Image 1: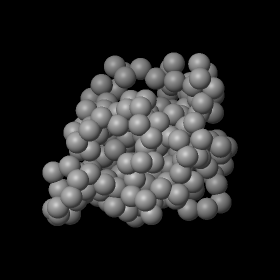
Image 2: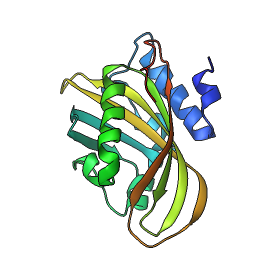
Image 3: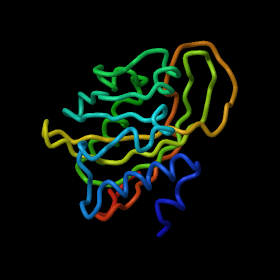
Image 4: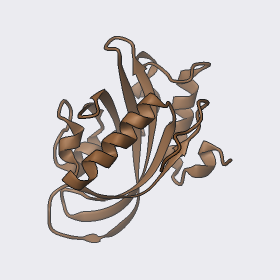
Length: 177
């Protein structure tokens, strides 16, 4: 089976995975208190932390400046599902809750349109965290633009999940893609 490093395309995603792997130590999943934004400050513009309240409520607790710039807004505190295309919400919620309940990494290739109309293909790596203070599960993610595909009218939107691959972090992977 390919390692996490072999599945990742961008240097930023590989460095992000290495940082996450280091902060978890001997644990399967690190706690939020171990995450230090200063340790990966050069990656932080492309990082989000989502807190999973339920399959219907996934709340961004942190969104990097690059993420906010591309979206044209700061999503912190909103329901992340409300920012997805309606036809993608159910599948996205299923990915997130499956990942939180079966701790594993996820690498997705997304096609998005930013607030300026640029349609991009991006690699996203999402990794689980716990949050002892709230009792909620979290996902910390890094977004790397791989290519600009063109331009079209419209505001920010995730247009499609082109592919998703699970990454075994020690608990196996779910049996769906």
